[in-house]
Image (cartoon, rainbow, N blue to C red):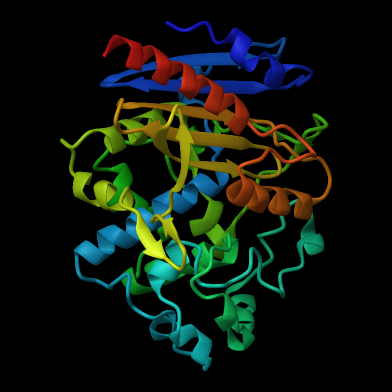
Length: 356
């Protein structure tokens, strides 16, 4: 057991409605921890509470691409233009599905015709298939192809294409290729009535309750809801080779040299204690999440919080997310849960390494 209070105290301070759950994975074992500032205690076990996981969804979308490629339904080398047949734009014939999964397509973080202020409380719900088509008709980011540029619209487009090719909903794809094989029964975009009863309210940095997001066309970029129990199972699957989708997960762990740097299908890469970790974070108007693991020591962490790290400007959030990926520095307007997650993972890695 690890006494996590000292690790989380800075994050939990002054968050009146906070629910923070943590999963620590070591070899085949998982330990769950929960911290809250609510006077009224919930009857829901913390490991089964549901959170918006935001951009961690992008990892799942990339794995869906690899699974469908394995079934020869498409190839990660297929050009995007092949699947957007009602749009005549040569730029789409220069980028591939791999480009979308690795954020090297040149596409911006948001489509230029996506007005976040149109519905600030639920900014993705208003962006339609027609809006996407209109954007792609005129998009040209040829000069940026091959360079890293974190793109919500890029991975959203990838999820959209996977659904079109398969004739399935995103949830159907999740269930077929990932959540059913890994027994992640609490992970989905669209929740049923029982799951909705375990879906927490989200809060902005100010403590104000905010509406849940409907990601619509962007669901492949950030639409999944999940629990610490399910995401810990996902981390375990990434650390072990004896499960149904092991080969696909292993492929997602392999670096791909694009432009002048290594990229991954969905994952980000970082260093702790001179050892590589794969990770992703997530954020929405009311939630913040972090997932990371080290394969060498076979350890990982999951942190889910019902507090966001920004207060008013959605664009502050997106620029902070982009800055985080590029510089690995914390954004100035709020505290991301990543910092806490890294400290915890580093402590676990130190303990495990000292026993070897």
